[in-house]
Length: 265
Ligand SMILES: [Mg+2]
Image (tube, rainbow, N blue to C red; front, side, top):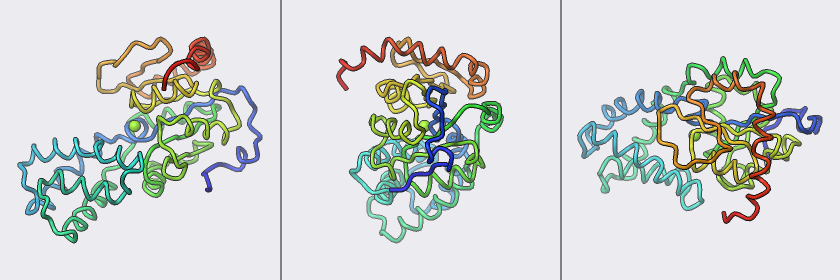
């Protein structure tokens, strides 16, 4: 297994105890909502003759099908291609679509999805401003596609490590993927802030792994539970303002981390 690391970190030159900021990718650095708004109308138009739903109904069905099948892919129940195949059949409400037509629809989706990839307005400025912190990405997904997203956004040079679940062999919230990031960066979970949009995958996963979670809640979602160690931000750029306090944020989680060892997973 080869992981994506820089030479410096691969050689283990990183000083222990230096704060590390780890990021989720989708909906944290990459604006997935903007991508959907770009590609969904175009996908509907391109595949209209095969879709047995009205436009708005298709949008809802497509958005619901993404997490349903992606979680089955992430947990190893389906391959990456299978989950896309099932998503198309399901969202198109056309279970009898010939395989070749499904494949053509996936090709159209792939092209449109990539055209829609874009960073959030504050992604680049935030990463630029966090110079001096070691940074990494820990993302669930297909290795090739996640690498393409990172290159498309032009953010690769900011990161000391990039860990993708397919390549790692386990997805967030599995603790092992967070531990792997620490091994690559030669740090401990207590050195790490983890920034992500998913409460279940990023916040709870990072918290159980012993990292300090930062929940990015751009769309005013209700906080699922009160966890005092979770810092909540609405924009990525807020990280810059709190960056000076990151070390103390890490320290804040230390008492709970000691207790977390007795918590059921
Ligand atoms: Mg995400």
